Image (cartoon, rainbow, N blue to C red; front, side):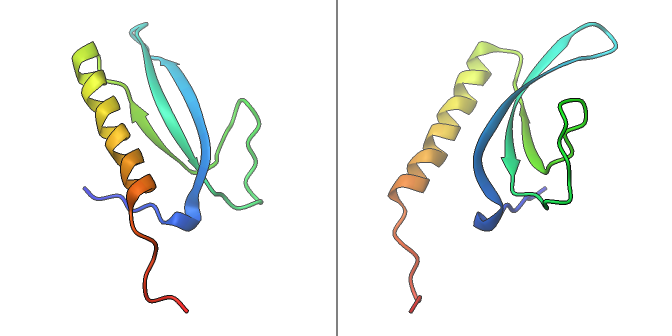
Length: 87
């Protein structure tokens, strides 16, 4: 699976999510909120904005691996050359 998120859709808003399953286990995630149409509403009980949700792995080792991956993504944002071919 490939998911493309274009720069025009990116925001700096990140939300922490906690959801309890029907088994009583609480799962946690980080949500990157995307730019959404003004026609969408987002009251606390029904946030229908576009988002990319990253559910946290169970093990601390895997969480650390993923944190390092996100740090590498941050480095790409900071270190990538500027756009070329623009007037």
